[in-house]
Length: 91
Image 1 (cartoon, one colour):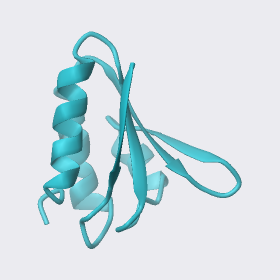
Image 2 (spheres, rainbow, N blue to C red; image 1 turned 90 degrees about the horizontal axis):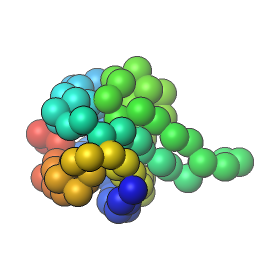
Image 3 (cartoon, helix red, strand yellow; image 1 turned 90 degrees about the vertical axis):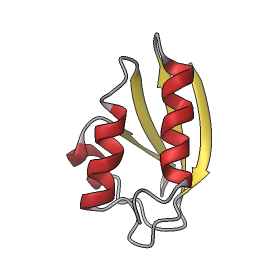
């Protein structure tokens, strides 16, 4: 299992179009990919391969998320998922 934290730079956060791009990228990998975000009162977790799950996490611009990858291609998946967030999710 590998994980890395990253700040959402996209001005609209992870709303429909950026969330779709995020999930489409996640679906290219065989490992399990989840997003964790600190929230009150605890932690919100979302399946990165499900647009509804990502939208339900209410991730906004400036939020810090942790991308967690677990499985056969976890290193490649983490590298790609972090890079797509740093690139601004198609802003």
